Length: 235
Image 1 (cartoon, rainbow, N blue to C red):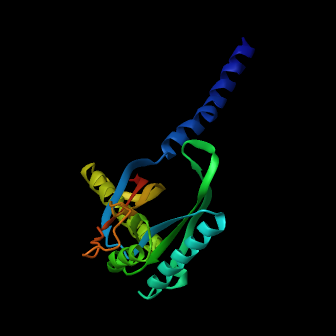
Image 2 (tube, rainbow, N blue to C red):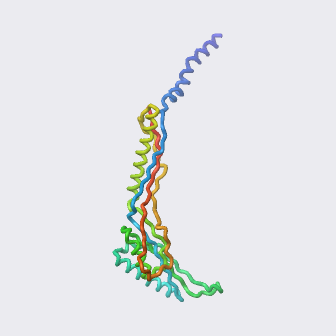
Image 3 (cartoon, rainbow, N blue to C red):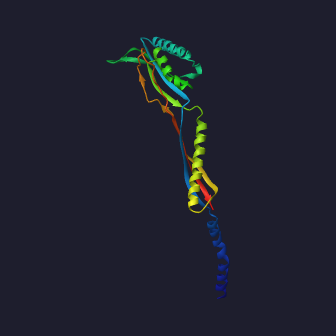
């Protein structure tokens, strides 16, 4: 009997200590509000890139390569006259391969050389002149025209800051309606950030070198957006 009494007394003594940590942990858990902050705005592009291609053929490999080099030199010199420099014109690809007889796949009838360069400019209003100049001097393809932003990180930072402000405003509105207030930030993470890189939406193939009117190219504003997830502690 005495042993049973002693065991009961020990249980009564130990039980509060065994339970109290979980109770204390539950009391210490902060009350929180989780929200998503968003931002979106448009920026005028300040950089453009034009992908220009040429194709030349010859009866021999040397002939096709020589013709290709001559045409590309003419194009580059013409673009230099517009104020572009060597650093603005970069080779994107160079392909060289034999051309086979369509009726005899074993017979080589000649050779083809394809050369593609990307021309980058900070003057987006000059894109039409770049295209016209390249075509008039031998370019056979204008594969793409893209508009972008030079300092992308600056706009990413602006979008993230705006998204955080949006998250703070949302959390304050929710907390206020609940009769609470924001006292701390528990966690924050970037959910998504996007900077648009817009193509002109026009493809130029086998353009006429005797075009009467200049090629019209207009740049649309680029979208920049961000989303953040933030958890706030409330009182």
